[in-house]
Length: 295
Image (tube, rainbow, N blue to C red):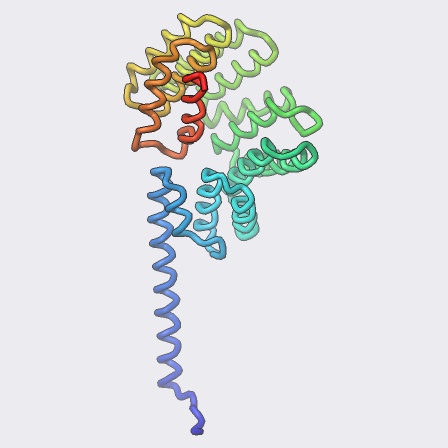
């Protein structure tokens, strides 16, 4: 058989083919990530997952896949994917934030011994995210939540939560006052908690989120008429907001009142085509609807 000799001409041809193939594959992968991002924004996580690969070495693709898997409930695969992304980009605060969220969700559903390990990973990831990006509002908020809710033997504590207030002041002043309210409520300083919520609304008067924070607080205090007043104010500002529909219904279901209206809002929420990843999952709304229906 004749020996094939590499010449300058055919070597150039081989190199050109390799480059073109590599560029084509990269372009296809980029296109898949862009399409998956649009699907993710519409909460079509299953469709987005089908476009993405956990064997990828692209950090953006792995991060997005991990987020989709988290929302879709595949926590083991989400963990593996985000850990791989973290190894490729150890200084990416967003990856650490989502790792913390995945480990936190696993801690909520695991048996005691394993839950403690997951909780430790949660704290470590959130703390790293905040260290990498102290102005990342979501990371600071999530770490604040962990410190406020976790017992001291898992690394939580009110003093640790309070220590994050300066960062929250820089990242989101209104949310910092909401955080102060939560700290005061935790220590049964209810007048201070209410005053802090009023301050949050003064800073962000058009924020329906801060209005609903006030509504939830007043509902927990048994001041239902005042709670509903704030809830109604928010609804007048954003009558078609799915997230607001869910939030209002959740208050009424938890306090076992206005259940007919709660059911109407939850059905509208479940039928909404404009949900985002920041909105509660439809599965949670369905469970709340069952509760409102007495099932």
